[in-house]
Image (cartoon, helix red, strand yellow):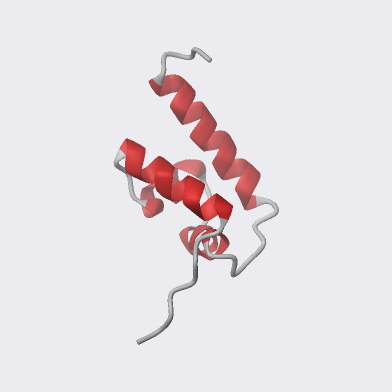
Length: 72
């Protein structure tokens, strides 16, 4: 059986977000406009994701703002 890689801090953010809003990582990747495989690799530390992380975090922040009525 293959060993699972532990999630990075960013990976835990993604898991929390997808669980909170009931979407899959595949849906998150599609809506944020990034490649699914790169997103998965970034959540486990297999690739750095220097360009991907800010894009996904920005999408997650905007999504949360829209769900919260735009208030901070």
